[in-house]
Image (cartoon, one colour):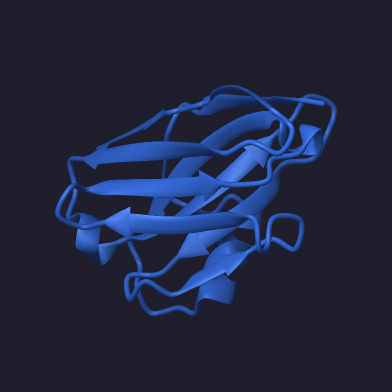
Length: 129
C-alpha cells in the first residue's frame, strides 16, 4: 500500500495550488480519503474528507476555498486550494481508510483523530504574504 503526495510548492497569498495523492496497492473505490495538515508549532488540522460516494466535508478554516476530489480511474485524490493565505502554510498529508459506511462529517472527525489506516509522507505548501 502506498500513498504519494505531490504538487506542493511556494505560492503568494491569493494564488491557487492543487496537490495530488497517488494511491496504489489497494482497491481505491472502497476507501474513504482525507487530507490533514501540520504546521510547525501548530496543532494538526483535518482539512477535508471524501467518502466512497463522493460526499465531502471541510474544516471551517478552508470551507469555500478548498475542494477535495478523487478520480477512481486514476486512483488519485486531489485537493484544489484557492485563495491561499499564509496561514495555510503547512505539510499536507493524505490518508486512506478502508471503510465506507460513514458520513463525510464522521470521516473528517476520524481524520482529526488520525484514525486512518494508511498515510502518505506529505507535501509542503508555503504561502507568502
